[in-house]
Image (cartoon, one colour):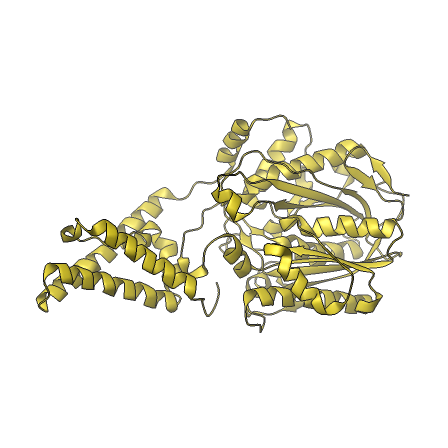
Length: 342
Length: 125
């Protein structure tokens, strides 16, 4: 039986195994430092579809299919699929997963969706209601620009704090089993808002949520940063990562060299003109599924904390003058199913 | 975390690199000025072709709008705007247009925004 620790954290008694994972990316992602990690790359932003929204759906569909193939499973073997994306009504996920016939739990966590879906998926397995599930998400630069900002041709200048929404998708197959890595614990985030209204500085908007969730995890479990090889956020980017470090230090938590961010790993900030770094659900999903999980399987990482962050606002409320609320969900991953970190 | 929004705002300002104002302002001035100069040349050209000043100003505006739409369709405008910033957003004004310039500026802006929202780029950045 899973144990609640403190108010926010759940330590799993039957840690699910992340059996396999797959990633899909586009041109910019293939040209980044982790370009080689993608299972599927299509340099056409339309992925052969009639619209970018259909392209994003196609990306999710491809990611899930590939993950299932790697796990040696069919869609009919999967008990539940947990997915979401940035678009209105999460249509990227809906239409991408429409053909699969898997019981679907739609989620909205903005860019925190990968961690959110892993949190929920893990508890379904822990609780015994599922044996095999899939957690996935996606983002697409063009659909996000259409959703949140301007037509691409508008030609507005991006600020140094702006981040680049990744055109990427990641899917993970979780099952009751013994293949590492395992989900050992989850910390569900609270909605945080420190009054940031600048939609061009999402890192600053989301850093408080990441700080709060990380703080909650350490307080609930009594763990220390030194016990983990890596404490990696989803897409705080350069500005958000710096703020996160400052916020945690104010509370006596120093992540030191363990701190990293998927948005800073996915792209080359010098060469790829992504300003403060990558962002989007697909950013953290692809870096986790394509880079971090394989490193864990290879024994290069043993215990990590994956904290995906999301900005929960909509363009409408921001135009009405609201500040940007954010959230961060934490997943503790380990190559050991028992002992070790817990 | 125990900090106020004002305190976090201060932290954010310190952590956030500012836009390169000197470069942006210079480029906006130069490229915006260049666009205005092109507009003025067009006015002179149309006047030389026999149009009166009011008509020439209108024709120059139409020509500039056409050029901006053409460059948008050719996927070049956003590359210029990335460097020029406000220089490409500000519409041309002739001194002779002063009386009706506000309506014209507004309509130019509207025309450009309408042309953007209908089309879609054939390739993405």
